[in-house]
Length: 427
Ligand code: UD1
Image (cartoon, rainbow, N blue to C red; front, top):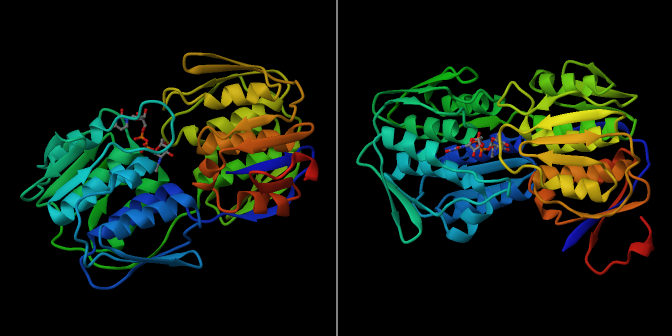
């Protein structure tokens, strides 16, 4: 098992380029199933991360031809022939649930097990299933599988009880080949939803309204191939900004869309950090860290839940008190225990974490309990006194391309080790 060993205290400086968003790439890879043309869908700006490889394996198991190289994915779904996602692969990734919509639309039947992914509390899929039923799918459980079938999806009016990102995407993909028009009300407004709309339209779909709470999808007969560039990863960008801020460094994050990070930048600034915006970059110019009265995670354009844990690491280092309210997911505070091992002072009451900042973080042996919590532990390690070992880094590698290599280029003292290497061998 690999782990990161970090010697804290180095001030990060320089610049880092951010690649395509994992959370755009995953639904867009699923949407490639909708192309019946015998030509490749080409996706550019694809990060070399574990989730991409996992999704690639799932698509190959369905009969797609998929190849990857130089941050480009080529997918041909002309011969997609299986409607069953292998259980082992499904359990690895929650986002496999997105496959229900496009497989159903393309083959009229789909069979999946309950999805896996990050362990961040109960993650029901009721909104996905209700929406697919509204579009005309029959759904039942059979020997541990969820099975959906249809003799033809039909446009429908769908009101989501919550603006779920995954449900909005799944239903958009199911509706593009449906007969008639679908309206999704109370849709999620994340930039990744707009990216999916743009991709579907590039394939020949007719989708409007993504980025607002009402998405309209006019069904079309068939979709074809296209070449498409994925938007930059705002969560990876935010993580690097926080890495700069936590070390008191001066660091520029490039190739991004700064407006996607408005809520994040506002909170980092509130924590005393100076940030400058360029056309496609953001720069952290250190500052004296101070606590923020309240940080609440919300659907976009609010503060993203995916940056709650890295921000907590930052605030654990800040002078004064902070309160963090996690309103998107239940049980997304597993990193609190790990941060407290590093001398942070954080108490949790339900969905609120209360931080008493100011204490110096101390190196310790900690775990990446999920993808973003893992990034938070790395950030804490960069700022801590002494050596931090972060275990279970496969979680981090699901979503960050060459995290250790990029941080090292910025001046961090971090190495990726395989089990068995002695801590005393130095960092
Ligand atoms: C996506 C992102 C994830 C991010 C999250 C919220 C991907 C691959 N993952 O996850 O990184 O943290 O959005 O921004 O894009 N819910 C239900 N019923 C449902 C679906 C969701 O109750 O059928 C609840 C969830 O339990 C959760 C909330 O809705 O409490 C938000 O979930 P959702 O927006 O669906 O997140 P994901 O699409 O899973």
